Every structure is written in C-alpha cells, then in structure tokens.
Length: 384
Image (cartoon, rainbow, N blue to C red; front, side, top):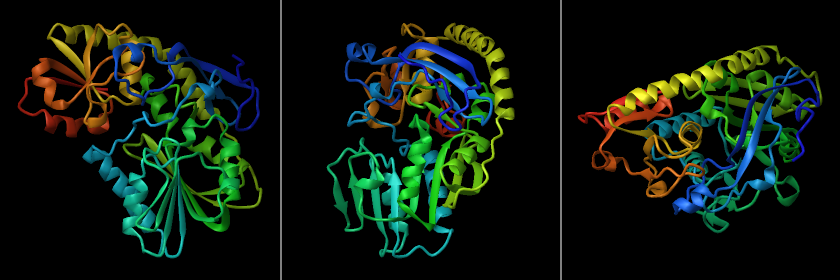
C-alpha cells in the first residue's frame, strides 16, 4: 500500500494525521446474507489527514479498488419520514431557483433513482432527467419518457448532451480525487448551468466528536472553506453555501467561471482536528463506560444500520458480544448482517420479542421519530 503524500486538492505536503484505524470494513452500506460472509468482508486501513494549507481531510491509505458499489449496496434512507422531509426541502429549494423548462437535469450518484424521480414529478414535463450510478438496481432504462438511468459512473466523454442542472448528493465524499471529478462536471455544462452538491460537514463531525462518522467509504471530507477551494481550483464560483439537516450536511451551489482567485484557509479545521485528536480516546472510553452501565439493565441495541451504526458497532463491539442487534426501518436490511462484526439487523417490530432494554440512536436527527415508534415500551433511549 502506497500512502498519499500530497493533498489531492491543493497538492501541499503539509499534512497532519489525526485518525488511524487498521483493518476496518471498507463498506458500511453493504449488508450480508450470512454471518460468515459478513465477518469475511473486505477490510482496509484509514489514516485520515488534514491539509494544513487548504483544510481538506482525506484518507491517505485509501485503496479505491477495494470498493464494490454493486447491486448489494443499500444506503436508501427514504423509509424515514424525517429524511423524506429533508429530501422534500431540497426539492423545494431547487424548484424555487426559477422556472425550469426544457432543461437537461443530471444527477450523479442517483442510487436507485428515488430523488430524481421525485424531483422530475414536480417540474415541467419539458425537462429531461439523467441519472448515473453503478449501484442502480434496475437495467438502464427510460421511465415515463423523461428520465434516463445509466448503471455506470459519470464520465463527460461518454454522454452526448450538455447539462443545464447538475445535482450530486453524497457522492464527492466517496471520491479520492475530487478535482478531476469536478473538472469532468465542468466539461458537461455551460456558463449559465447550475451545479448543486450535498456532502457531510467535517467541522460538525469534529466539534461533536462523532468518531463513528469516519468511515472507509468516505475518503474525502470538506468544510465550507475547503470545498470552496476545490470548486475554485476546478473552475467554479461558489454562489451559495449553507448548513442543512441539523447542520450535519452542507449544500453548495456553483456556476462555471474562468479561472480566478483561489482561496485557501485551513487554519480553523487544523485546529479542530488537533482538538479532536486529544479528545478521541477519552470520548471512546466514556462511551464504553456508559455502555457498561446500560448492560446492567439488559440487552442493548443500536438504531441505524448505515455508516454510523456499522462503524460504531465495529469500533466498540468488534467481537459482537455487547450489542444484541442493530435496528433499522429499511426492510431490505432485515435479517442480514453488517460487515466486520456481523451484528444482525432487525425489524423494529422485533424489539419486544428480542427483549431489548436500551437503544442507542446513532443519529440525533431521528430521536423524535424513534421515540414515536417505540412509545409505551419500557426502553431506555440514548442519544449520540
């Protein structure tokens, strides 16, 4: 394994390592049908480093060839009313930018197409949608004559149209080399085209000591400053940037411009990473102490079998002896196993049968939703 020695954004070699984990599952959103296959899931190393010049954070030990975004990849969050409202808010935001007609709308990393389908239903029928994702679970097809899905990665030279609107939600954090990715998008648009990106905010993760948000799949993390630098280097101007979804994510709107001034400001994030490094061991210790107290009350489960829950389980219970199971509302995950530790994923309706006494909610945004689902049950809910 060859470690990356220069920042993929600004090419600086002024790097500071602050997260180091060995042999962790490379996928957090793949579920397995057997315990054996889950325990034998592919692993990799993480050495997260911050560039002291531009503030970009990335995994220096990342090996893209280990990843496999295929049919078994399952990261849909649309079974949650909370997340559905978040998606509706984004769609309303896109609709409110102006009268969208006769436009070609491309979504890069469309998953199984739910977001693009919802968006296109709200727009004028003169528009055409294009979705690209290797994990798209159907055959490449045309739906309702105005959406085309391609089961492949987006490359500008493989398509024969120019996009008026480009949407990329929770994709760029999976890209080890963001600049070439953004430059490919730039090739596919005109000067009046609009580009929208949604991605996690690394400063929220660092400030809140969310150690379970550092996952192998997410090899690239941004702050507002570093993503601005990345877009500027790639030939864009950032028009709008705002925190969304309980400030966990950022929403960026850009337009294509000629190369201009490039801003680089990594000081704030470098400071946060050094503070995080000092705090991480103690935070993990406190969680183990809290879990030990919960065990005296009976069985413990985690709520959320996505990246957060999978990482939390593998870090704190790699031998699968502390947490009884992981609860998730996505039916496609039920009775399957998370990679690495092999914890089983259950239907929320099985909570009483399993005699669960404590539930650790992996994302505080879903606390009210979880509370309503298990009301009248003698269960301790623990927020992260």
